[in-house]
Structure formats: structure tokens, C-alpha cells
Image (spheres, rainbow, N blue to C red):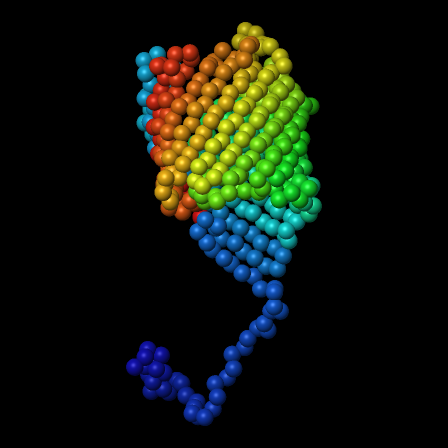
Length: 401
């Protein structure tokens, strides 16, 4: 006997409830239903691993994605090296990404970062990206807001799509980081199947969401040629084992006028007067049947000497390069190696020393870059002696949804 029937019988016994007579032939009253929506207007929700959660309604969609990188790292310096012994566990990156689209012409992207190492020490800010792109024309897309400056290849590649645990030390010193501005771009100029791409832009020049006190701006231009046609050049390595060779060659130039940042768009802030930096870069990326090869040359030069008294404020001028290769041994398993070198130019910051990196890496990719475990070992000599430096060991687990 169900609780509801028992309560009904007890109430009837007390005379407090009178049950209506039910006829077996009497149909049950129809439930009220809302009128059905016209075809094509219903919203849908789709959740897939590696693609996040996507909401769609007619011409509008909203995608929510996130990723976390958990890292273990050790530094073992030799005698005379400028670094100290270190063992640490950390969350290197924790990101949340929102992408909204209205038809195929309008795209809005917002990316938030919550790791301490994703923020600048003197101006903590969770906002990494916030830009709107109009891509109504094949040869002329317009992007406005805070985004990566279209300059060096490895910096433009997402940190979640790298072949090794992190980027080259050359890129760390000489890259142009995110900035706020306007750029014109196309990934398929003239409709040649992705063989020609360009980007030109004007930015504030002082980095992520900074309010500069100077009148200078950052001007940048990049041209890329892919002679064998379009491919995903924003993912390192060749986990797809492409059947046909793919190649991308890029050239870039930039001029950052009157910036107060010591490394152009990043680094310490000058207190006395700004400087103007000139930048040049070239890069190449090749993929075929599990083999990948990439390299990059970057150059940055300041137009002023050190100023300030009694403490001098030095600009940082240098050039550098790296070469990186990888081979997919078996599905889901890749071995990689990198050699890089950074050399200071004359009249630069005395703390900017000659640096080199030589390392090998091993990556396991159960779900490609959405779920991967990467390890690498690097020898990092500082100065002219190759036998004095630091041994760096890293392991990193990444999960993206």
C-alpha cells in the first residue's frame, strides 16, 4: 500500500475527505503543453571532451572551454651558475576561454587566467584575451581588442599546443606579448588555399591592458607563405602524421615607439624616459608523416643608451634563435629536441647574459593536446663556458575540456 493511498484512507475514516467516483472508461485529463517552437529555432547544448560545452541557437553560438597545466620542476645548478637549487610543484596555467559567434562573420573571444605565473607582478590581471573579430571578407578580417601581437610563431602558438613543456628561452626574452589594439588580417589571402596569410596591426605598445603615459604606439606586420597549402600551423608537432608535406615560412617586423617597458611590451617599467625598439623575426615550420621541424630567429634593438642617475635604466637589446624537431615514434608517443641561443647586443642591460639551451623531451598524448603528459630535460649554460650552467628537469600534465 502506497503512502498516498494510506493517507487517503485515513482521511476518509475521519470524515475529512470524500473521494470522487472514478470510472474506468473515463479518459484522464490531457496535460497542458506549450506550443512547439518552429523548426530551426530551438537551442541545443553539446558537450564534448576537447571541445568544451557549446550552446547554439539559430545564428548564435557560445563555447566554453578550460585547461589546467600541473607541473613539477627541478633546477640543479653547477658551481658558479647564477641560479639556485629549486624543487617545486605548481599550477603553471589555469585558463577559461569563452568564444561567441554570430553567424560566421562575428567572433568574440574572452580568455581568463587564474595562475599567479600568468599575471604580471606589478599589475595582476586575470584578463588574457578580449577581442572582437569581423571576418566577413576573406582577404580582410578586422580584429579589435586585447590579443597576441602577430609577430613570432612560437609565441602565437597556444601554450596548450606546444611540443615541449614550455617555449624557448629565446622566445621568452624577445617575443612581443599580448597588447591592446587593432589589426587587419587574413589566413587565406587571394583564396589560394591558405598559401598566403598576413597580419598588420597598431597596438598601445605597453602590454596587457596597460594605460601608457606616452604617445608612442606599436606597429607590426607579418607575412606567411605556405607553398603546399593550408594546414594547422598553430599546433607544434605532427601527431596527425600528415600524408603530404606541409611547410610555413613567416617574416615579421615591428617598431615599438616610446615604450616604458624594458622588454618592449613586457618586463620592468622605466621610471625616467621611454625607448623605441625595432624588432625583426623569421620562422619556419615543416610537418610530414610524424616528423616536424621548426626554427625561429628574433632580433630586438633599442634606440637609446642607458639613462638615469644614480641608478642607470638599461634597455635590453639582443638577438637569438632556436631549432626544434620531433618524431612520432608510435601513436600517442613523441620524442623531441631543441637547441637555442640568446646573445646580447652592445650597450644593453649588463644582467642580460649569453644564454643557451640544449634539451630533449618525451610526450605521451592519449587524446592529443587535450590530455597529455610531457617531460623534458635541459642543460642551460650561462656565459661563454658551456660546462657552467643549470640542469632543468620538468614534467607537466595538461587536461583540456
